[in-house]
Amino acid sequence: METMRFAETAIRPQDVAFFGLGIRIYPGTDLDLMAREQGLLALPQSGMLEPVFYVSPAVAYGWMLKQVQTAMNGHMNFMNSASLSLPVLLPIQRMAYRLGVTSPLWKHTRFIRRGLRLLGMDA
Image 1 (cartoon, rainbow, N blue to C red):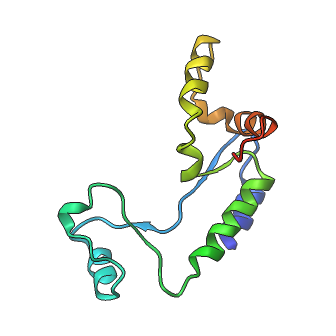
Image 2 (tube, rainbow, N blue to C red; image 1 turned 120 degrees about the vertical axis):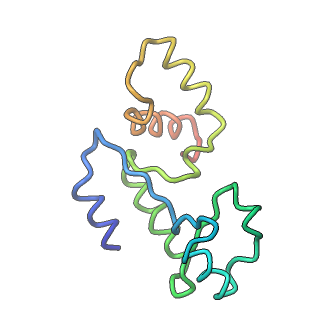
């Protein structure tokens, strides 16, 4: 909640805040060992090319996800990993390029999310 309060007061509308849940686990690190000891990770280290994230068992993941989603609903410049996986982003990026948008696409996150919501998408 402290992070969310900070983001809501310190992140300017023209900037973007990206929220990831958990801490990335890298093979062979202390966090890798800890997650295995806690029974949270059984994947072999060789299978960790795709990102694997640690969330403490003391934290309710569903509650944390809901907090981020609630904040995203109120701030169009807040994003999470689901925002990056929207299939419509690649066509938007191509169209923006053709229209001469030169700055990084993420700088226009609040406008893109508003537009997608007007189109009925959960963005």
